[in-house]
Amino acid sequence: MTTSPDLNASNPKNIAADRAISALSERPLAKDLAAKFAKAGFTLALVGGPVRDAILGRLGNDLDFTTNAMPDETKSIIKKSADSIWETGREFGTIAAQFGDVTVEITTYRSEVYDPESRNPEVKFGDSIDGDLLRRDFTVNAMALELTTNPPTFIDNFNGVNDLLKKSLRTPGTAENSFSDDPLRMMRAARFAAQLGFEVDPAIIVAIKAMSARIKIISAERVREELTKILMSENPRIGLTLMVDTGLAEFIIPELPKLKLEIDEHHHHKDVYEHTLKVLEQAISLESRLGGPNLVIRLAALLHDIGKPKTRELIAGGGVSFHHHEVVGARMTKERLKALRFSNDVVDDVSSLVFLHLRFHGYGTGEWTDSAVRRYIRDAEHQLIHLHVLTRADCTTRNQRKADSLAKTYDSLEERIEVLMAQEELEKIRPDLDGLQIMAILGISPSPIVGHAYQYLLELRLDRGPLGPEVAKDELLNWWSLNKPKI
Image (cartoon, rainbow, N blue to C red):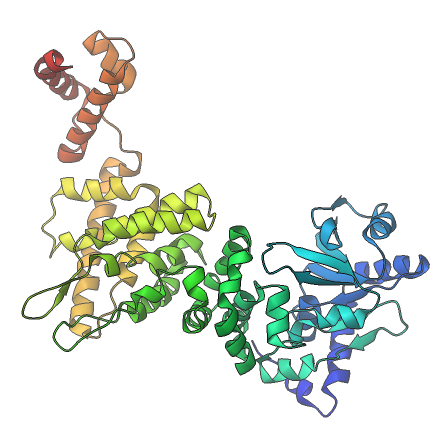
């Protein structure tokens, strides 16, 4: 994030206000809404992240407003001009609407306090914007632009502009009160640090260390969304490190801090935790192969070695082994992602990549047969490019000669895959006979036998390449003569 030099002038608040007003002038919708609310006798202010982004010159199409109108009154004011309205946030005072390509959320002034044992806030509507801003998460998100005054009034009660200049993350009130109101804000601190490169105020760090267990009252879905935003940020290492160092990760993704394995003078191995963060960074650097930022590859990079702590064995005479950590890790990955309520597709794809991430190391210097290469492709299925990225990212050795050798070897594997795929269309790999043909040749009706025969022919296809229908028919009949008495 960069800030224009003029924001550092002697009156940064005035400049920030002018900049926010100028950015908002490109959104006629805001002026129109303000006029409607003023006519109805209510206030309307742009608030939070959109104000911050307007100051930074990057106002998007998601606008947040706050008002002294109650939700029913807000709905009544906007219902004729909105393309659509939804009320999923009504209990929190929020009415959302779509106006063309702009999404709007309008929330009644509020204060909310979480019961220590409850996942849901007790919402109380407020009577002033000052009280509303005090309950915001961070000072850079506690600025507002009151639009029903002429000219619009810039409100910055907690020096958010100065914190924006200093790239400093602070809370409007005490961090303890803020995190007590909404424990998810602890994760948001990590997210903003990762997204914006802000330095987190020491008071926030102290509060998270003391209150990290409170995150347990937050629903898994909300935690998942915040973790996803951290992972998909420009520099997820910053956010993940903050979570681990404060103990917050213990209640969200405890497998991550457990990667900090004790290393003694007799049994050496690389720092698995640091290796993991490096793999994540290297995977991100290769994401262009996947079309851009990719959640599945980032999760796979983060979790690929989580089976190591459970499989660690000390070898007599020095050294450490982690036999089958990919198998254990795949199971742990599935359990953790399910607990965080990730979609079934994400769970399956990430756990599959964790399971496969060591497969390449059996390639040696190219000894695999074409059959082995076909199986590599078949097992990777639709994630072949993801597996390419993860495997390359998993090389973090400082030995440049070794790194170059591994890269060259993987280059050769990718070249073989391309050749085989071009020759045999392996992404569409099927046996030479389909189910109907199998039933016709064997004279049988639909049954599990057809599946067994199909799998047999598929294995032949992987081993020997395309057979052609006549050879496949002969092989099927030979298989049937041997297996019919057993089935």
